[in-house]
Picture 1 (cartoon, one colour):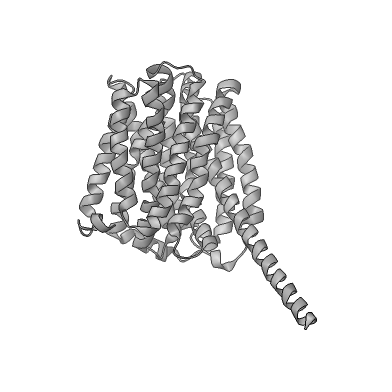
Picture 2 (tube, rainbow, N blue to C red):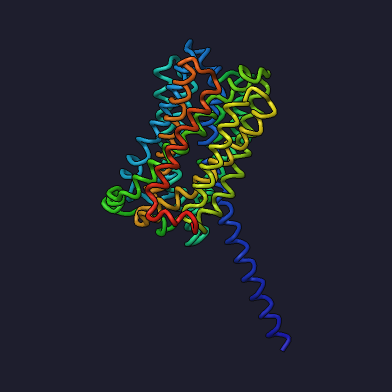
Length: 409
């Protein structure tokens, strides 16, 4: 009797330990994915925080310097479908490692660039892995968290990017201000080496993560719903970049604060993005449209307040937080809608989502730079973002299968 009870107790302990070990392994896998996206986010957003530094060093004005940011975005847009399709049959673990290696090379080249042309090329190379990384990362995260949680899985991978806007980008900006902007990219490259090692050790080696035929991935691009969602994302999310690109000038030239306030402003923006990402991940799995409508609609109000009152620090700082939060509420919904439109190509849909967001990056930075260059003032960038987000929301509403869906979504 006692022997049977002891055996049952041992079996229960063994099951508990096995579950704890499996949970620990899953946690480490998600951490590795998040660390990689943290590096990518730090590199992308730090460029906006140090735009005044590299523009001065390279002898160009700020509107011209946005071309380097646009080059990164073009790298993502080109790389997302190209890399994903070329590597369609690769195991997602192998793909993630290759992408992180290319990312490291791009950031080292960014650090040693001697003119705008070389710097823009380096930023293009740095951007090429991003879309495919988030696409493959979302597939691995979905495998870890289980079916039916696509929004949560994508939000988990995106967490690294949003946390980068809280800690990575402000710290990188601080580093650039004190040790030179080139060291910002060298530091990102060094951290990316650690991410590479984490992916190597903790992403599981399993046939379940093998890719699929290229034809299967390509077939998803024939669906109008995919392109409609990408268009909504590219236009609607552009406002986040129309604002973020010029956070430094907003702080120093509009609110008349010292440069030491720029990392604080960037961190507030990042806190908003992280909060919005968590909210958006929960909304995306439960509702097909609500996260996007709430996110874009809220952003329009916030952008108008920023454009009108941004010269006041007590308006500027809260509105930077709110721009990040409202826009990130929408992004997981975009991912879920893309995946539902083409469930046979989850990696490509994740990549195309990031491609859309970087079209938004290019459009937002360009639109903000154009209004500033036209003499409408730095805060006119917020109005440029307002117009783009309004257009994205309008297209989304018009392309919904039924207008009544908004009431129940």
